[in-house]
Structures are given as C-alpha cells and as structure tokens.
Image (cartoon, rainbow, N blue to C red):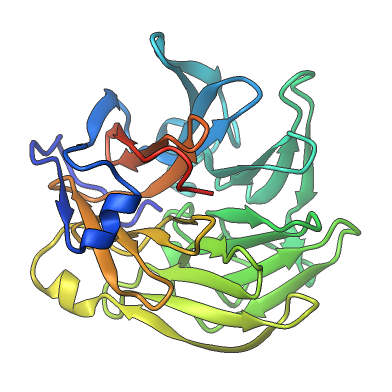
Length: 321
C-alpha cells in the first residue's frame, strides 16, 4: 500500500481469538512467527506451489524477494519495477501486488512502471498487459486478483507517485478499480473511491471486495457482480473508522478469501479473520501496520507482510482455499 508505513520494528506480536469459530481455521495455541526482516515495506505475498517458495515485494526498494523454508529470503527480481526513476516524481518504483495466472506465470501490479505485467518464471520474459485506460496512463497499480476466466481485477491508487493526487505524472482523473480481460479490454468498474487498495473475489466470483485506505473514511467495500463480472451494486462491508479512532496502527489494505468464504484482511490493528458478513473471528496483532497476506504450504500456513517483516501463522490442514 505505502500509506501506513511506520518506522522501526514493533515488538508486539500475537493472535487474539475473537470467536470459537477461529479454531477450525487456526490450531489452538498457534501464534505468528517472524520469518524475514530487514525490508523497507513488505507487500504482495504470493505462494508459488510449483516451486515451494514465497515471493513478496518491497516497492520502495524496487525488489521482489523469495523465501524458502530453511533457506530464508533472497533477492528474486531487481529491479522489480521501473528502473532509474526520479524519487522526486516516483515514490514507490517497484512491484507491489503479485499473483499467478492459470498457466503459473507471475502477474505483477507494477507501481513504478504504472502497468499490469506478466512475468514468466522460467524464461524471465516480461510483458506489459495494460498500462492505460481511455488513452491515459495508470497511476500506480497496487493489488490484483485473477478470476477463473483469466480476467484480472486490480486497483490503481496514486501511492506510487510522489505527491499522490497532485503529482505531475498523474493522468487518470480517478483512482480506479479496473478489470482487464484476456482479449485486452480494460473496464473501469468504480472511479468513486479515494484510495482503492486490496482486492479479492469471493469463491463463487459473485462478490468483489475492495479495501479503501482513506484515513478519513477507512473501509472495505463489497460489490455484487453480474455474470459478466460487472458491479450491480455496492455497499460498505466493514467501516473501520472506529478501529482507526482507537489509535490502532494501519488501514484496510490487502486481503485474501478462503474456500469457505472467510476473509483475511488488513485492518487498523492487524490482520483480521472475519465472516462474509464481517463478523470478527480473530486478529493477528503486530503492533504496527500490516499490508497483505497469502495462503501457502498446501493450505497449512498464512503468510503476512507486516511493515519491515514477513510473518508465518500455522493453519489447520484442509481449511483454507
């Protein structure tokens, strides 16, 4: 995200159970552990099943790192985004959100390059799938989610641009939520949000979730989608203003949805497990902002990017999607 960075490494780290229902997801007694440190701003976690490793991005450092169990984290891709950018113009030159397409290729929300890219993990060939809408360059694509038909839903806030909305590089009149289709069509789904950020689909792909990292109105939106993936209506699923008002660090950011529809989403104060109706089940508290998460290790782990650290939480085998 980039909006909720904090200096230093907080010491508080625990999973707080808010409902007995959490025990079907996380084994009683399980707690998060730190598996990687020394990152400027950890983002975009992605488990790659074919390789048995985790990728995560560091947008301000312009790197993607790879973490392997027992081996730690090493640099996987540098630069991960735009090379040679002017820091007076580009705040986050590197890649942000990461995903895999149906063929196992890496998809990148390139904040610095201002595009949605595809990267072949074998050949390391990279191509831009989309870099503009209505003839105007994107702001700084932040996060993305791949639908079963290959469409890519993504958010485009101005976090990567120095100056944000007032940046001289900003061409789009909105900070949008978009959908890219495999035929190359790009559609603007919502241009009304101030700071669209994390994005995910429900298991049946009839709902689209989008977090809004607006300090004045932090929230998670849900959109009902028609058969073609167009929004038919939207509403606030979670109003996080009260959470932020307590002084809890961070804002709504990245999220993932499990097979049973449970949402795991960044909120002020940590990473929350909640039902599709926004009933809280549990909260991973880190003492600082937390950006995103990913399921991995054949459903036995939740990985979280938390400021300058990456965390690992054991899950019950067979639960997550």
